[in-house]
Amino acid sequence: MPLNTIIGSYLMKGRYAEGEQRLRQYLAKYPSDRTAQTTLRQLTTDPKVALGTRSRAYVAQAGDSYSTLAARHLGDSNLFLILARYNGSTNPSVLHAGDPVRLPLAGVRVNLPAEATAKTATGSRSTPGPTTAAVAAPVPAETAPSPDSPSAKAQRLQVESSALLKQGQKDQALARLDEALTLDPHLKPAGNQALRDQLLASYHERAVVLYRDQKLDQAIALWDHVLAIDPGYERAAVYRARAIELQQRLKQI
Image (cartoon, helix red, strand yellow):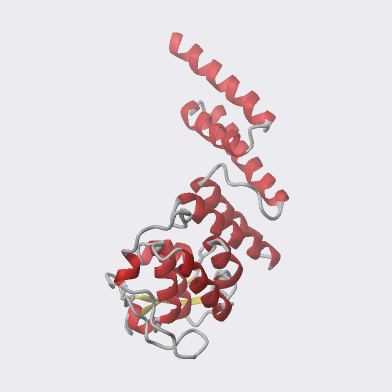
């Protein structure tokens, strides 16, 4: 099972015990995958050991997720799991505007031991995690996927978007999909196509406003983004051609 699927289908939904089992199976095949190693340590390390006992209060805003908060406050969106567990979350894919969140104090150094011996998320004792030797092992002949790439992060954000939409959090779902398509405009659709269509329409409308204000470089860049996502988006193609034509005429004045 790909690491993205383990994260999206198990860990993001709080299925920690099953997720840990899948992670260990994955690491048996790809012992050099550092993102999988880190994810397992997030799952088996006591969050207070990893992030410290001193924290500050924060109120979640629209568009916040544990991934975006981890990126802003811990420097890595992949640390969403330890931050979610730090807050006692049983479903890391869900964070509502107005929810109270505890954030470790600024400058904290995340401590994820190479061998996690703390209790796991299910309360049972964890077996030692992969050692340094395992990390340094040769890469198997079958190359592991790259879960820390922009494409992998975009897939995870799209999974979050779908989960938020199912819970009626449309604005947050749109914001998460916007992040995903910014990271990877070629991301294959998965979930509600109508949400993607609405986001593309909003991009196009913003580009039209920029075009009317003669901010042509910005408008063209936005239409380029729309067409990278959906090459068949006819309105974007038509307006982009007009913008380029107008840009050329203005240069001749």
